[in-house]
Amino acid sequence: MKIITAEELDEKFDNNDDISEYMDFSKAQKLTSVLNQQYEECEDVHIYFPKNLLKIMDSKIKDIGINREAFIKMVIAEKLNIIETQQTKKTDII
Image (tube, rainbow, N blue to C red; front, top):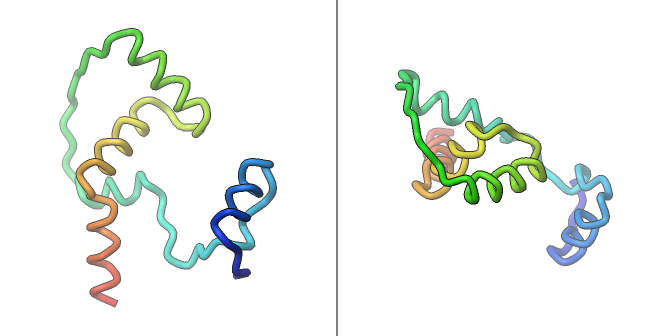
């Protein structure tokens, strides 16, 4: 893995350059696998969103390349610090 400054990485990312050589994938996990580990039992939840909020959400989703359900789970997990907590627990165990 090569070392690079945050500014250089941002510029490469913004230019759609390949930044994989600057990433450490050794402990990478898919968001869905992290969430599914936390919540083995799932419950169906129906939520009504205002159309203007969905329009904004869909714009973000298009940029990221995921579906609405994954986006909503990701945002909630980030707000609840679930992902960070999961990773901290794993490094404590190792």
